[in-house]
Length: 68
Image 1 (cartoon, rainbow, N blue to C red):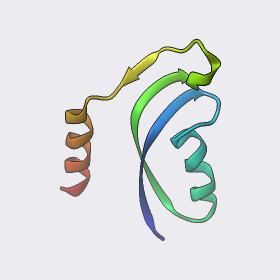
Image 2: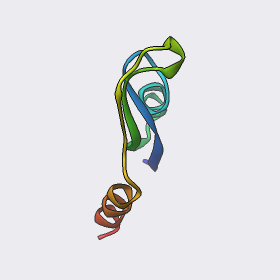
Image 3: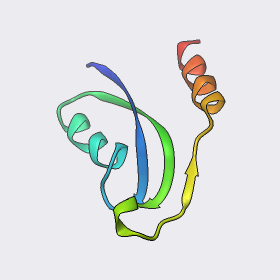
Image 4: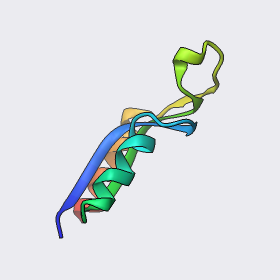
């Protein structure tokens, strides 16, 4: 089985970024390791949304943790 580190955005409502990418990759038999660069309530094209952008240091720390 292949391992895929998916570095993308994430939305709680709807399907965009890792919210959309994980399912088909898992269905194809891959181990998916989602690393979310943002955590938003919904896609920004809805006009109204809330959430946060993950700081680069947070992402680096997680990637280093995976490598260890």
